[in-house]
Amino acid sequence: MKDILVLYARDQETMNNSKGKIRFVLELLIVCVLSLLFIMIGNRTCGYIPGGAGETDVESAKVIKLVDIREEIIEGLQNTVIVFQAEMLTGDEKGQVLEMEQIINDVTIDKPNPVEVKDRILVSNTDLMGNATEDAQWYYLQQDRIPGMLCLAAIFLILLLIIGKLKGLTTIISLAFTGAAVFCVYIPAILSGKDVYLTTIIITIYIIFSSLILLNGFNKKTLCAIVGNIGGILATGVLAFVVNYALKITGMVNEDYVFLAAIGDDSSIDLRAIVWSGIMIGSLGAIMDVSMSIASAMQELAVEMKDRTFKRMVSSGMNIGRDAIGTMTITLILAYAGSSIASILLFTLNNRNLLILMNFEMIVVEVIQAIVGSLGILLAVPITVLFAGATFNKNKKAPGQFD
Image (tube, rainbow, N blue to C red; front, side, top):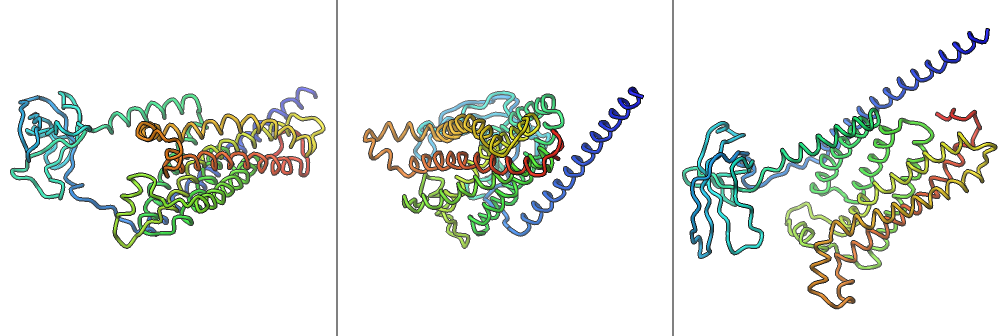
């Protein structure tokens, strides 16, 4: 009789696991379908079509032979002209070997590396205005780095699948949808003149829901992480908005923002809103990480803690959260500092006066991003802990029966 009961218990456990897997797959499919609809409808609603001179006349080629290197004076400037032969890899002339030129201006600082045999490069037969050159002469534009980036991405994805297994697969799917939402909906929406604040809020909420559900399924742990994440990111948004106005941020942070302001068409871009949006998007990943970590820890506490109560769980959760706060805050600050280290070095080199240096808008915005993002992390911890403590103590079940 005892053996029968053991076998029955094992069958029940297998059935529960099977049901859990089926439920997870169904949730995955539902989120994928809804994400596709969101991206397709969002992209069509934006209606933005990118343009640019000569874009269709850029092709990829592979250098197979160096023909000549000579010095020429072009428009009064000394130039090095490298003549080479390259096989066209794309376009109407794919497979043909054509003679091309690379012109290196010896005066400029940002000189490209001279082409070498086996280099993959981008070439064009149009000038800066998009007009075809005489005799359809092809010129070197820049290195074609896409194959190298694809190789690096492939290594990352393969390792992610090997180490993460099913979690790695869902991570890849989540990354794909997040990237598509940013580049197919978020960017086109802003460039087409949509409200930056509303667009950022919609994209942020979409990323929170889709990513967390794809990675962990829809359960109490995910719900706690979503609530904590939304609470932290909303606090970040409010603080960033207030601080931007209090410090009178204009949005002229660097030359990229200046170029955006000089677009000169009907879709005028609010640069102050772009700064705010950058803070939101930049801090989202760190807040998501902290919220998910705290929610997962709170679930484990609920399973393992004897005589668990709301007060005990909140106390333990806050102890765990304090450790997460320290590392994630440092991570966020270092990420912002690292992304602009060249500009900081340049400003420091040319401006010895610390008072002037710390009032450059670019430096001020970096400080705002780091501090406000860290405040979002700080606030996400207690929100997640309190909600998880209430959720996992509501209608107490046996350990592990929370989903």
